[in-house]
Length: 374
Image 1: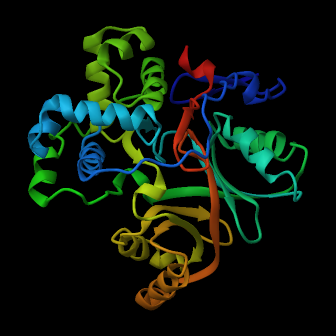
Image 2 (image 1 turned 180 degrees about the vertical axis):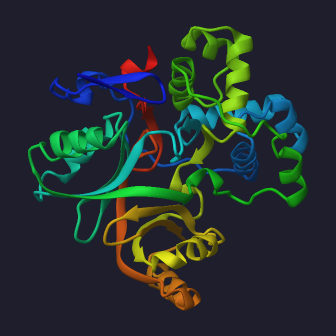
């Protein structure tokens, strides 16, 4: 018996055993060089280039140079140095939306000596979007996805829970994501510069996602600034078609492009996750207020004991409790409360990108299963 899964015309055999993702996507070899090499010192121009690409990730170098007051060759050279070292990168991903996929925040409790190994293993699975090593009552916090609820159960219960050393998993199904990291900015540019870089108006109506779109997405997940000619080769279509599909996917919000920088270089080196709750009737008002928080990186609405899970970046460790007190005070009228908080000890993977211990990009893991690409 087969059941149809959309979008992407994927079919899942319900009577066949589930296959571990690492058999589908071979793990790449680690790049040469020590993972703990010091991060480079960045200039104001470096930060301005990153900020420009946060606003318009595929902006032509001529436009970036014009806005920053330097020539195009200079900004292209600066970006190449940043991207080649893994210090900054542009990638892309499918955002949480009503697209037929299911996502969840998963707490993972492990044996004391296995958490680092387990984190590295699941970081190479396509179904795992992000992996954080944390303090507190859980050792790992992961964001995972599947094509449907059955797939979510298969992956969490069959793959993650079945790994040697995993003692317990807790699943919080994501029902919404009012804020995600592509909206976060460095604030290196003036208001006028930001306005000049604002992307042009784009078609708002989404279209059905095709296998070609998914091949484009996998390529953009590897390099969000990949030239159209290479994108067309990877997707098996024409340059004109791939250009049109990229504009449509990004313009409609179906696909997100994001420019990221190794977190210690952003000025916000401390990462914290708050598990919070608010009465359901106040959820919309609470998330509207939280979206204005400069420290916020991700806000997910979840079905579980905590209906809000907040990822924030802070200037220093003492700010963990300062920000919590601020949130509780400012949102007291909504009966907002923080039930638990954890420090992120290390981010193993962030939105499909495996990181080193300094937060640099090592490699991209395709957030797609191969059968959806055909």
